[in-house]
Image (cartoon, rainbow, N blue to C red; front, side):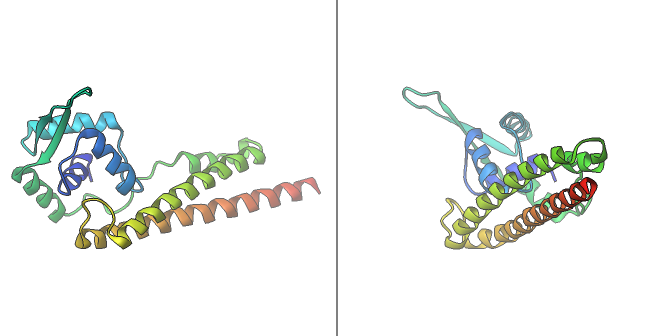
Length: 188
């Protein structure tokens, strides 16, 4: 999966500025594909050079002009080609700093790991709340530019995100319990 294809897919919903595209990323697919604003603008330039998108400038009074990007037929064909091709891998890329820290956890005090895990739980709970809000939007088809057919497939990815974050929270809570139990046993 690539940033380029994620952006082409999002631009099928409606034309957007780079800033709007970043907002849509953050409010829809961020639980499985995120991007920095600088990455988005860099990729927009590449997509435009390839003819996959076009831009138009919208003049604004008293504000900087807006550059609005739209997908082209060539871009739509590229997205379709990518969607119909086999993924290079079906597994999620795995580079998880938290798990790495826990793996080497014997080198630090348990309270340090517990503190880190508690922060992780808070982050995941916030992510769950955001996904639940997105789910409410999808349920009511209130998300701007979302059609019922799109919402069905978007809901499938949302459910995966909900389960993923819930599993992370469960693991972190169990890890904290085990660390606390181990600490109590070592004190006895």
